[in-house]
Amino acid sequence: MSLSNGELRESYLIKAIESIDQEMTDFLFSLGFYSGQKVTIISKLASNYIINVRDARYSIDKELAQAILV
Image 1 (cartoon, rainbow, N blue to C red):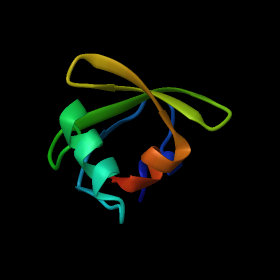
Image 2: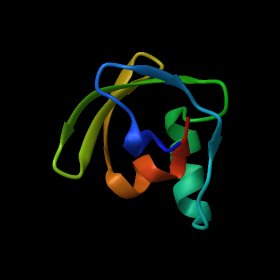
Image 3: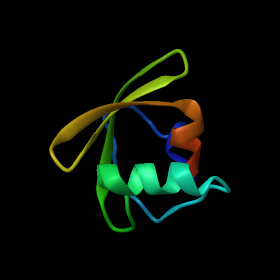
Image 4: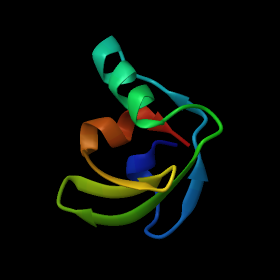
């Protein structure tokens, strides 16, 4: 399932990053999103997600959240 379908305050392990846009994949990798990394959804506001990965919080949009498979 993609991270966009996840529940609030739940931790997930990233299985893969799936995107046809290589720039998006590279951007997520530079933030620390890669297979085996733990990610937690802090909040969802409209189509924005506040997530925690590697002791850092990020705001990502729904398109990025859908590219992260957990």
